[in-house]
Image (cartoon, rainbow, N blue to C red; front, top):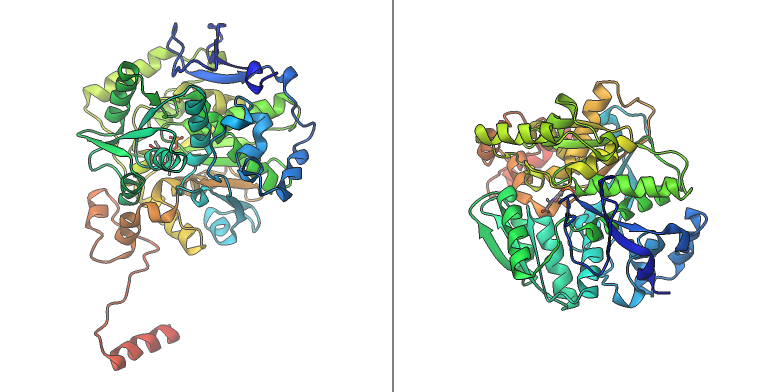
Length: 465
Ligand code: F0G
């Protein structure tokens, strides 16, 4: 039996029972337009009886499928035959205990872990999903793939196309909306880059229409295969915690693909009897791009058994458009006002007794500086997780003794402008324009004349202070 016989696509809505073959290229249910899941007939999958059985593969690093931090969990995302899998060694990421950040958040020593997804080949968590999307693209014989991106998805898609040579890539980015590290990656890896005069929400709308009309394979997180790969971040967290479930998982929210994938992973593990309890999930928006926070926390939008109140969503977007409100945050990766995975994220929040918070740019950049000083650089959007955990601790929702995992989604070098802007004295004006007037953990360079005595004087002053 082929690995693909027991996998199929299905709408997330309980009102759409029809299923679709995995050979079909779909980004929504053709009838209801709802998001799709990849689902499996688990009775026919050889799933290990314990998560510990995946450890067998640790010693087998010469096999690319066992080396990959995504593919070594392949029985939990079994939609592709082994010979179709596209992997570039993604998912070699670590979960690191960080007591200095634990102190900052207000947790006991040992209570805070950082899941460092910046260690992926393209420097962000997106590679977990892109191995899966690239694999599906190969299965259906796609020759051109595309995505809209705030930068990391495009870097990731570009690297998979470059390494595999399987397809050409067109990436759509908002003009002036993408951090330079990420733009440089897309250009360097040979992707064709379309800079749309607009933002991410505009670029995503355009790329969806273009892909539909031009028969191009779409790699945004509306592609249900991509999210299958992102489930493995959860497996690796559990693995690092000796298969124990933490109290909290805290993740930044942009297009809400990651939080959705986490919810699906956890629900499936529970259904399969591989874990007994679920962690609580906290999704953190940037305050300048806070659609989920507004809808979930302020207006009470809920999963509601798969039938969320669409009128709440429509009214929110109508109001946003009437006021001409666009997403606006220095955490450019999550500068998104119309998260496409909203409903899937509601499902995850429902399953994991979830909570949503917003962090402003000053809080995000202060948290980023603390993470950096703890030895784990990240880009601004990633630091929203730590900023959010701190807020939840201050509110007493996270307890001092809780075990908390914050996801660091992207590498520090993705957005050096944000880091240098925060720390340097003279480059802070862009931050001030965005309302960041205080920089609590500024570590400015010391400017000295090119003169030995003056330099020694500066060094002596440092030694005494
Ligand atoms: N953190 C980083 C570094 C990201 O690049 C993104 C999303 C997120 C968090 C949010 O994740 O969308 O799953 O909720 N970046 C996308 C991109 C939108 O185009 O690279 P999400």
